[in-house]
Structure formats: C-alpha cells, structure tokens
Length: 333
Ligand code: F7E
Image 1 (tube, rainbow, N blue to C red):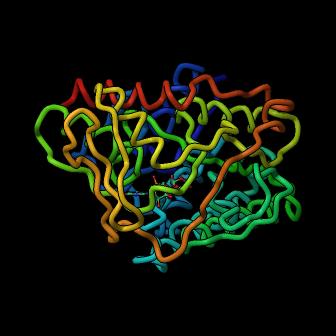
Image 2: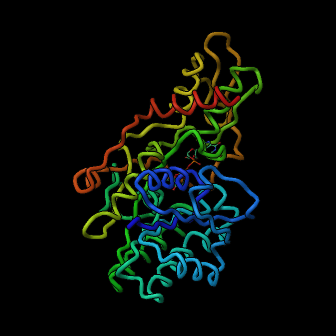
Image 3: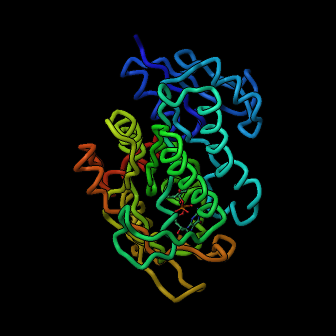
C-alpha cells in the first residue's frame, strides 16, 4: 500500500522539492498551506492540498485525524532571520508551537506507532558557537528570535521522542538554496540582481554584512536527507550541510563571474563598494538596513554522521549552485 505523507509549508521551497521526491517514490502526498483554494501551486493535481493556518489547532487536529499520515514533515516556518527581529512573537508562535501541536496531536490520536515526524531544525541554532565546523554535539547558542524559536522546536521534538516514543527526527539543516529560493534570502537576491544589472534593468545591488560566512547547499539534496531520516530503524538528529563555508562577499564574486563581470572591492565597512573591474562602475553598495542587530559570523556544518548512517552526501557544489541559480534567473529575466 502506498505510504501517506503530510507536509506543512507545501508551497515553500522545501515543500516543493520534497513533494516532488515523495510523489516519485509513490507516496500519496497531502500538504498544508495558507491562503485560499483559488491559489495555484505546481504539482497541485498530484497533491491533496489543505488550506489552513497552522496556528489553528482544531483544524490541524482534524487534518491529521482524517489523513492519518505515515510521515509528517514540518517544513512550515517564519524562516527569515532578519524578519524574526521585527516579528519575534509571530515567529515563535509559528516556529515553536506548531511542532509542539503536531506532536501533541500524534499522541492524542494514539498515532505514536504509525506516524513518523520530521522537524526542520536549523544550523542557526549554533549561532555564536565557538566550534568549527559544528557537529551534533556542539553546544547551541542561538543569536536571533528565529533561532531561539527553533531551539524550542528542536528540544520539544527530542523530548517527545524520549517521553512518548514518538519516531521524531530533527534535521539540523544549514542554508539550502535553489532557483525557487525567494529573494528575501541573500543567494537569490544576489543571483537575480547580477542578471538584472548585466541586462541593464538594475543599477546597483545593496547588501548588509558581506563578511558573514555560511554553508550553502542545494535544497534538492536536503529533502532527500529528510526522507532518509524517517526510513531508519531508530529516530535521531542529523546535521545536513556541505562542510564548506563561503562569505557573502565570495557569493557576490561568484555570481557576477557567471555574467562575466569581475568584481573589485574598495573601501571599508559601510563605505565598502564592489566595482566592475573592467570600467570602475560601482555595482555593489552597503545598506545598513540589511544588517541584523546581532548575527552568527561563521556557520558551517559537519555532515559526517548523515554520511555514515544515512549514506547521504550533497551532490552539488557551491559553484554549481550559484551557476544553477544565475542561469535560471537569466532565463526568467
Ligand atoms: O542570510 C547576510 C546575512 O537571509 C545569509 C534561512 O533559511 O538559513 C537561512 O538563514 C547571510 C546572513 O539566510 C544581506 O546577514 C548580507 O549572514 O540568506 P539569508 P540566513 O539568515 O543564513 C538558515 C540555516 C535558516 O534556518 C533560515 O531559515 O547573508 N546578508 N546582506 C544578507 N542577507 C539577506 N537576506 N539580505 C541581504 O541583503
């Protein structure tokens, strides 16, 4: 019999990649999203879409009671770190309490033996951590309301696993991107801007902290790890990352190179600019509006445990990822 999966955040980047993967594997896929039934999403015909706000407990209860999924993937979140400083309470309600509600519903409905639960945890939990690269054993030190909300989600998942024997797993996901990444994340903001600048549709790209280093992988690889975690004999938590760190500055250089522009940096701090090396035109400037009140400087994960136990490894390098995204934006613009 086909397995049944329920995905929250079905219309987000990861929801789209994961639903495609599960449909290929023969799953019956249900998804939850906000909005109204008139809105359209890719794959809609193959997915049973439930339109619901996840903060509505009664509705969430009814959906899980009706679907009785074999696997639940909690991918819905207020996932933007910068926005979490402006909307800390909303971020907490969505990111921390929704996984708690799902775990409570699994238990209340007596689905502990049937339903396996995946929680999209995050490399942001490590925030200010001094250990590089970060492992499953590295102490957490969250640096944003987003990361603090995800810390609660992470631990409630561990707690319900230990207390009630629920098959619950945290995927500690480092940054993962794709051509469908929204523009309020730095990768897509940069790839789209380089293409628009190249085509004369935009003058400059304004960015915040160029020195932050992140571990950027391909979302299509990361959803495979989510699925693998739920197929094991035992539930556990795994870091999903590439193991390679790059700065935002390098990301800018790589993306411009894809459109044959070499960037030369001049100045310091807020006055630093990125110029087209061939003609001296300023293409990148700093706008302090994109700075965060505090942030993690260097996040890079060690995916050895996922490699050894899940047999998972990333298939796409940083350079290939930037190329894939820039090429896609070239076709779109
Ligand atoms: O920022 C810097 C910014 O917003 C990356 C989410 O998926 O991954 C993501 O969180 C870096 C940061 O992602 C701009 O300060 C500079 O250092 O693309 P981002 P994020 O905050 O790392 C983690 C693992 C998650 O769990 C999250 O849900 O880029 N940066 N200038 C900028 N960032 C943005 N967005 N815009 C800028 O102009």
